[in-house]
Image (cartoon, rainbow, N blue to C red):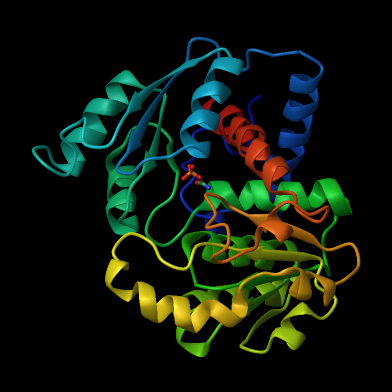
Length: 312
Ligand code: CP
């Protein structure tokens, strides 16, 4: 599966053109179809993926690990605290050593700047499996799941994200701006997306035709929305802000009242894990609008596409 992406890092959505992102999504469709037919084509025979995690993971770990097996390769799970990276060994040395063992390295690391440094020194492709500021793998699965409901060309569709400016929010807004999808962030002003990110979305939108908006007004945010998305209200390092955040986001909990304000075909997405009864109600999570488990499954198909394209 040689392509223009062979040998490239996968660090941020903004590193790729619309055409390259569409190639990843089209490859996802092909690989998912083959998998559903029971055809596990070994696109990566004997190839090895190193998987470094500094935090736990359900979807990312399983989708990369099984994905590599299905592609004919194998992976090594380096669980939180298991290797010397960041403790007894420099980023440079670890990147050089792991590049001698693996054909690609996947990293979940809570510091994007350090991930970039690792990638600079690695001699094999590096995949960002979530940092403190972005989650590009998640964004690919989010958009692929939208494509399954609304068709391949999502230009002009309206995505609304409720809540904090989390890593999935940044990457989702970025992929929307690349593909001409309108993205609205709905949150109290204090938690809206900062200019260092929104300036990049605006620049992309000038080319793609997408629109980026932020508002605290729920009626404005839900008007003709095709996809409602939310994520957790607090994360690692925000333990001291829990009460303040709960109070600020309470009006933005995704309920059926919010879903009913949207386009009649609206879908509900969440990167998971979810705080059921916190940022979203059970009723929405389990409603006919919810595609959360398709989205979780699609993590594996999109990640297989990235692996096959950059490692072939
Ligand atoms: N959405 C996501 O990245 O899930 P995990 O933390 O379980 O990998």
